[in-house]
Amino acid sequence: MIGEDEAALWRLAVASPPVAGALDVYLDWLLTHAPARGRLLLRRTRGAGRRKRSERVSALLNLWEKERKAWTAALGLAGCEDIHCAPLPQQLSIDAASIACLEPVLEQLPFLEIRLLFDHAYGLADVFASPAARTIRSLSFRAHSDRIDPEESGVALLRSYFGAEVLAALCASPNMAHLEELRLSGDELGAECAKRVAEAPFVALRRLSIHGEPIGDEGAAALASSPVAATLRTLKLTGCRIGDAGALALASSPHLARLEELDVSSNDIGPVGVAALRALPLPSLVM
View 1 (spheres, one colour):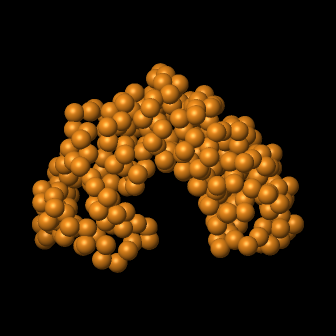
View 2: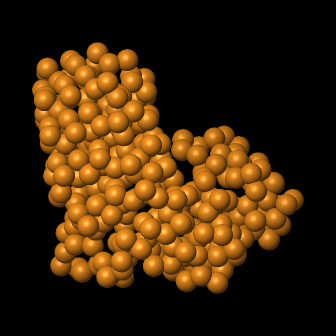
């Protein structure tokens, strides 16, 4: 089982930017408290030596698979299919249909990003109605790689499998009220994407990222006027076709007082909007 001590060391080991010496500290702890996983991590980080590149790659792939299985077993998920937990993982990916497998262990995983892999045929209401969904804190979407149509672009694939139906199910579910991080990208839903988020029951959302979604000024204004924004520390609206009107709505929002980081790069904001945003007391502003 993953305890709080290991969780703290793990967070430092996978931090970005890297924390000097954190991986070695974590490795020493593992070698003492979980020797099998410690030896796997040691071999992964310091092994392979002077062997030929092809041999080294093969050896590392074998170690990767062994360590992945070791992590899956350590988290109590060895008997559950469609669980993908990478070595020294920052994310855990799971088929949406298997989300119930996470219920016994989700309390151990506050430091992981949970990725739900959706099949468009699976009932989305069942996913977000699951008790397991209540403990998910960070959520993003990706498609099953083995279901990608080579003639479809990534955007088309996301639009086909997720789109309005997934977003509506997510934003209507009271089980998702305590979500802390949400990342959406390129579903071509327009302002409706931002409006759905603005109307969601989120009460603890800290980080919101919408990328490549043409929410425009209307979507930016919807977010700026939403109580959902009151808990945000990071807001990234990149490549969203936001202009001066949207920038002014964000700059004058009464709900963004706690915001620490705002990224509105790759938009259509002119001098008026730029001046309004630069006047905000933000530690980090990217335009």
